[in-house]
Image (cartoon, rainbow, N blue to C red; front, side):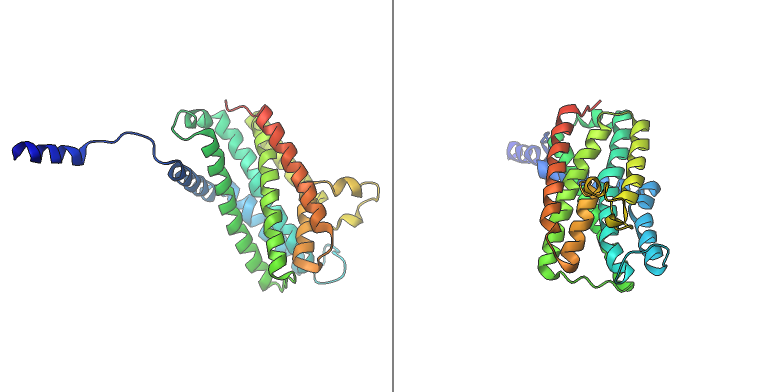
Length: 265
């Protein structure tokens, strides 16, 4: 009797060392990544404050000429595209660059979480932040009088564009962070952010630039996402399919280059 009780008690408290299931490790890492981004004041400024200020400021003033129709109808798809880029490209490039510099990626490599799991967790965290951004921006735009007219089909097209753009921007961010020093990544990511904000059709229509430059500007990923969202949430048109093609090409190119040149240490 004593032996049976002793055996039962031992079985109850025997440790079971080993890694947790992959899905649980990925979910835990993604949750931590979201908390880190939401606690970072610079990330909040980049991903939420600046897009909201641009949307409200340019929608309620006539500083910029956005063409016929309400300014908020033109600006909202562009600001949504800017928010996606700020999280998937700028924020991720800077964060990953400094994680690589301080050896965080190297130490994560010594944990049971595989590299695929780490990348999956970062992707989930980015999608989580984007959902928050899109929610805040859409509520702000509705309060300003935005009335999207694409219906359920337009929303499905917009979701597809955002997912494809996230993949493209993320691959480019990892390429930048995995090949340059952290300080250079910080400077380059912010420079690209400012340039694409001005040239990507976010707040200024692409047709207002010189005719010789327009074909090149339309090949930028931010321009493709902006024009695609305007087509999906607004008046339709064929630019949606063109945008999918451009974003798919950027995603494929960025993934190939990032997988070839990204250095973990």
